[in-house]
Length: 472
Image (cartoon, rainbow, N blue to C red; front, side):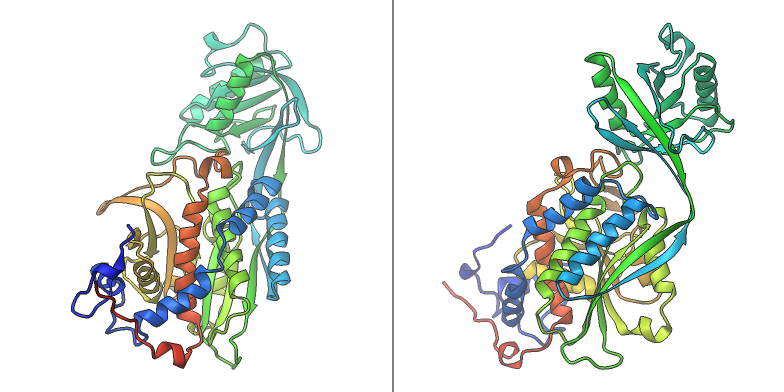
């Protein structure tokens, strides 16, 4: 809600100050020695320059030019090199920090028009490596014998995956016995009402043909094509082994560097789950981080800035955990604030608020700075909260003030009931279906103003000027 502030005066407080005192966890004027007017003036250095379209262009490169970026694979590394080269072009010192990760079992299916979709693959199916399998696609419904076409010899069979390993074993055995050369099992087991993404179908028997786990949207799209006529398909799958994932860390020293300077970290994860382009989760966070890095590269700060892009978040926060675990106590103590951007641009209207979430629900310098920035900008959608499923967690566990920034709707904190977009972690997490430039702009404005407020170098002539009180 945008308020016309010239009509209000509350005992000498501006509307921004009133909003700040009304929002939980927000620093008040008594806690902040810098007048609100000065903070607004500093905000303008960020607000006047951050550009959602620039951020969304980074999202496009990651989600469309590169596509899905599973941790440790060549596609994650392609994303890392793009991020690193962009940051180097801004003048940052860039480090690629590597760490070992487990194998990935990945499939691909290619349609006659050349369209290729990434899928998961069952560890118990056959692997084609560089010998793709081609065949006509047939739909076997739920995979029961009565639903099979008359002849599937030499065909690739599409079916809805059974709900148990035993059921999937039966499906696989029947497909092989009927002469199929490949199987596509449609995953429908989405979490929290979300659509299901690609997966690695669990079987307890070995199968002599490739078994790919396709997303719910993949299944819908394939059945639409089948309804329009026969479809040939080429499938391949591979065990990706001896993998190294990567963090990209860009550093800009304080304006007057000194040993032990305090550090502000802005983070996002560069990987996606298998089969998902990861536009909002989390190319949006990467886009935000790169755009803030561009804007802040030439501003004076009395703290060191680090823009960090984590690998293998989707595999258990592995990149952020590796980074935090290798810090000495002295280095960890230098980090005074960590801002984690994850899913910051969804177009899903049910995600009504932009949250600054901490691991334990307690406010800190990060959440306070964000909510105060929202108040100064007249944005009441910015709220603190508690959530423990992103890369802020390892920092918080090390005692570092950290928060996750995300669009969602929280219906209840006890028990936690929340809503995010139904298509995250799916093939539909694309710019067209799941990115709002307007939401991206809000995120850039809030996070950017908050980061700069924490990191900036004081400007005495400006900081001593109070904001004028406007009266009717």
